Image 1 (cartoon, rainbow, N blue to C red):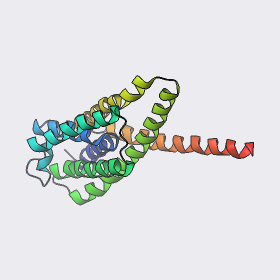
Image 2 (image 1 turned 90 degrees about the vertical axis):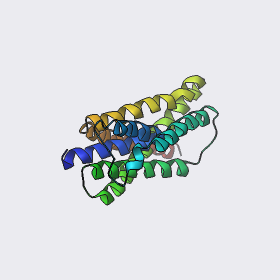
Image 3 (image 1 turned 135 degrees about the horizontal axis):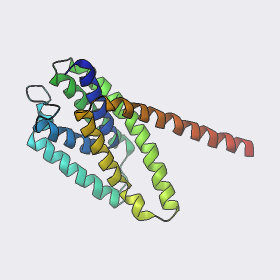
Image 4 (image 1 turned 60 degrees about the vertical axis):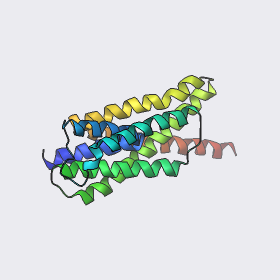
Amino acid sequence: MDLFLAITQGIGASLAAGVRAAVSALVVGLLALANVGVDFEGTHFSFLESPWWLALMAVAVVIGFVVARANVPVPAIVIAGISLGIGALLFAGSLADEGYEEGVGLAAGAVCALLAFIAATAFLTGAQARLRARGDEDTASFLLVYADVATGALAALAILVPPVSILALAAAVWAIVSQRRRAQRKYEGLRILR
């Protein structure tokens, strides 16, 4: 695999981590364990495909679902920190798998995960608020399940068809920009009312 594919693979995996970190790490780790598209063996990131790590990520997915269903508030900084950390590891692992410098991957993975975290948080928060306002509590609480499925699909596509990650990166940037524009229009409307 050349550098371009390693980079796009890292972009997609870290973007997925920004949405749902444990799901992304679990999917990428399972693919690496099966040596499908990525293999962390022989790198500093071999733990990403180890049974204990995969079990930890599976437990984290279940805990995340239970916490979301119970509406237990988790500080965004905690979720963001975990997402950035896992995103950094996945990007660096993709580069290390092909023998490239992993330090750059740590920084790039954290940035990609942060972009996806910002975009996903804005989208999920807004969608849940709209659903709850309509009284559709069940769909609102299962929105994270849909996010888990989408994250798993993105992580798998990032490993199997790495250039798809460029589209995911563009979508994350577009989501952030459009959300900011909506917020500006909202505040401009409030200023006009004064």
